[in-house]
Amino acid sequence: MSHATPDNLVCPQTAHFSAPLELQSGGTLPDWDLVYETHGTLNADASNAILVCHALSGNHHIAGYHHPQDKKPGWWDNMIGVGKPIDTRKFFVVGVNNLGGCHGSTGPSSINPATGKAWGAQFPMVTVIDWTHAQAQLADRLGIRQFAAIIGGSLGGMQALQWSITYPDRLRHCLVIAAAPYLTAQNIAFNDVARQAILTDPDFHDGNYYAFGSTPRRGLRLARMLGHITYLSDDAMGSKFGRVLRHGSFAYHHEVEFEIESYLRYQGDKFAETFDANTYLLMTKALDYFDPAQHAESLAAALGPARASFLVISFTTDWRFAPERSREIVRALLDNGRDVSYAEIESTHGHDAFLMPHAHYHALIRAYMDRINL
Image (cartoon, rainbow, N blue to C red; front, side, top):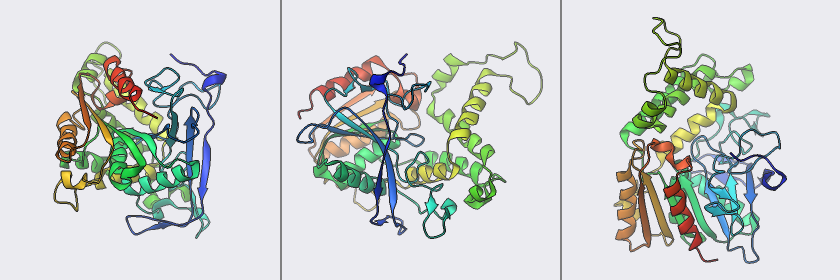
């Protein structure tokens, strides 16, 4: 287990943009902030930059520690750092909290300059395309014309894929991990049930709960519990919890009896304390809206502009974004003559496998990153 030391402490930074950002939804952010952190050193010609895009509940804190007292490092600390698969001795790695987030970037809890109050439900809808435009402006600010690679898992993988279409000349490699070219109806359904849990919470107040000094904690808790079930595989839940009872025998009541119940409630409670409900709504809608082929003849046609080399990775027990969804991306890229490597990793961890320190998975990422020329 890693620990905070002077060498792995990282300080988040804020980039302020005063020019309005026009959004795909038709909305506009008059001015906006992006919070980000960096690891490693940008080389003289800025050719060693890596952008890491986060998933639904992620943020800019990708590795290391913000404070010596932190108990946990960034969410991908097992992947990013000195001697790790994404080696910060070679690469300059950037993590960004997306617009609409709740970890410092402009989002629903930020102040709307037009009203002097929190944006709340008035915060405009943001999409994956909007995030790529905002990230591109941050890259300009950092002096990065072209990323050596853009990497992401889940919703982060969708962002990496969108980058390859929207800014084909601004990345040389694209790593799409545990992702899909669009959500299935089942996935949209899961997201809607999660949103309904929040929207129907009496403390939601039509998204303006900040003004009431309240939080739709019950709804957010349920949304996270539902989501967490879909991130794990049946095998993972079975091996970790099975039908183990907390107290050895049935108590015949509605309180916690099974260990899996205790685990889900703990995860829900913890998440509800640290995440913003309006951000959760926005992020799940961004997932629902993502579909590069929506206005194209096919996925292959949509991916036609891409020029990067690709590594696409899926995991065998990921039923939320199953391997066949990754293979759709691979086929579409091959139809365009792109350089594509594909790996389907044996794992029991379900969708969460992309976050785990799996030896084969890490070896693949390391081998791919080692061959990137700067």
